[in-house]
Length: 289
Image (tube, helix red, strand yellow):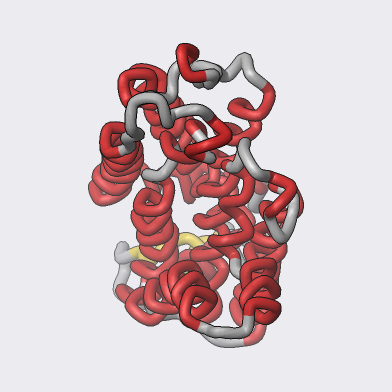
């Protein structure tokens, strides 16, 4: 029977769960529910920690691996981009962020809990929006730490590898406009990767398939552009590839030679993320859970 919006089991005293009418639930309630679900899953913290640690570690390793011969470290000779080198870890950190986003909704489909969620909140787009907002908040917080740590590591390591003021390079600093754009853009980049993965998972409804699709979109384009002989086609693919175009935001050297400007490249990734979320929203609305 039903009483005050709560559906009860035919067995007296056994409550199967609340069903909140669309007019009775607020976005704040849904956000709180999604935040509770995300933070009470142990894998959330481990994945965010892994994203931070891997991003910083790989960036520091890339900085430490850089080297140039004495007298040959001038910017004109190396073409080195200290900001991009320091942020190399984003290439690996994004895979962990994508995995977190996939699990944020993929686990609910795997366990069938998505039915409970959609029964409690019939407005399905509200559910997806709440998941996106909560996920983005967590990813941005972790990304700020990861990117900040990477910039600090690069500032400390790169001068000793020949990319210091003695050879004509500026020390990495968030007070420097291009470096700030590269750092802030990397945080936005990781947040967009999370939204892209969330949208794909909402559309395919399977965590394994979703992570395969997302990683394929990210890493397959660069492989294809590296092996095809047609340079014009390769350049067009670079302009369309979500990872390649999105990471132009990290460039502070040789920007004129890029197929897109840094912000245009990030806009390409944003378009992919919006498209994935739109597709996920359509599937979520039209298909049964």
